[in-house]
Length: 170
Image (cartoon, rainbow, N blue to C red; front, side, top):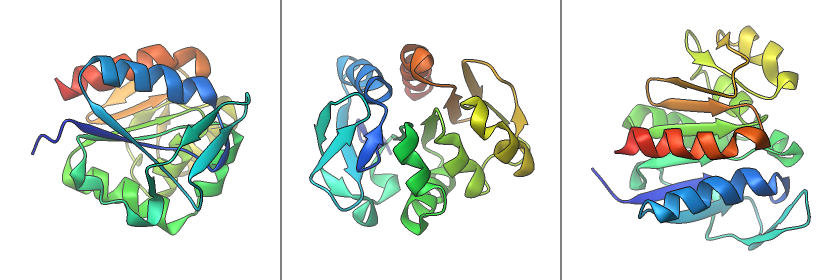
């Protein structure tokens, strides 16, 4: 079911500004309504000083209401590595067959949810061992697409990451 909505999940603080802003702009230019989810805040703080209004709390997210769910990195994303709501959102998105994205350290959320086992994936190098331990084939590429899962290395991959997600949604 096409909703024309994309959910971006960011940490309450220390999300990576450009990993949110660049793909968000690409999604909106492509005609998607972008919603922002986070944990326990109405305004989230980026690592580079930006702030973003939060539309809903992660505990209220219903993944299948979106065409894609995208987890944004930055050091704050580690808060979601073992967060039940974040893992549930990732699992529900995967089970619903919608596009699932994660950039920087956020691919570890997907790995910890058991979604990268046997899949090709990339992430910020600090997450390489965790991805491998959870069964992923770490590529080290800027952006890796495997089925409906798009993973990316970091801020330098933000534009290509956003474009690959849109390509899958077309």
